[in-house]
Image (tube, rainbow, N blue to C red):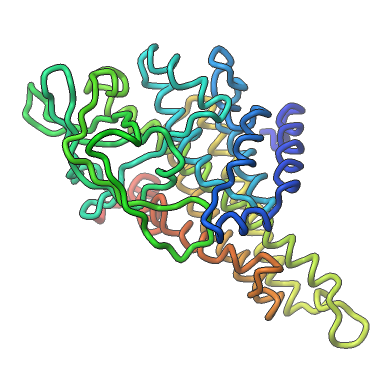
Length: 387
């Protein structure tokens, strides 16, 4: 059992940390509040190879795994710049295409993931079905050699920044007549695809959208894997990377909040000559939050290690636990930091309350804490399915 990063992973962590701090949380907030995007940070991270650390070297990537991508997600978040598109593009979409795309799709898309020039977002959630793919209403049907997609998607991140949307739809199995999932690469400028922006109470440069697909016509090669049999494995291929990288972002945000709070409480003096951090009423909550963040960090490391070893079932359990732990720890850390800073914690200047919406959302998405508890109860504790 080894808890140490390799020298190369340590170098990656240091380099990404330095890049994130050069931009900092004030950059992130300014972009979010002005309606802009973190384009400069994304492009520089791409040029330096950080966005493609998990893409094979034959396609221009770093040849690493999910462990390396989790490091990138965590360190940018720890610098106050959590980039949600790291989850949906390099983690979900690139993994799906690498593991289940046909050779032509790999050659066409993976080099763009490797250098950051390509962004592909992910669309599974629907107004009536949530993330339950058994009830998806978005349907794909054959029309000659083409496909026609119709349906609605909601809470789709970053569509205005992406060239493609990886859409989860349902198709009819010719042999059984049953509907089965399939994934399609849909250009964001495709005829029949429209979007409307959702107003969210979250300080983030990445926007959320409703998508409407009205007989969007796609060529045969838009089907990921080139076969309907690839749909279900391809869908599940993106779930573990999604949970682990979201968890890494949460842990990074928790680290950021605790660092801001401890810097403040170690120097803030109100009652005599001692800092407010000398008082247990201030120090103990911060210490407790730090413990929870570090515990979540360890589970992320375990989940990513299992995933990179090809142990998908075990990685699924650990990935869900990591996502649960990180969501809870990040929310606790930010709330505790705000409390420790008092009134200053609610100001934009101190850069802590700006994270409240994001960490609260981390307990809901991409899978709610309750659904993770259902998963653990059923698959770890052997309880009867409750839903």
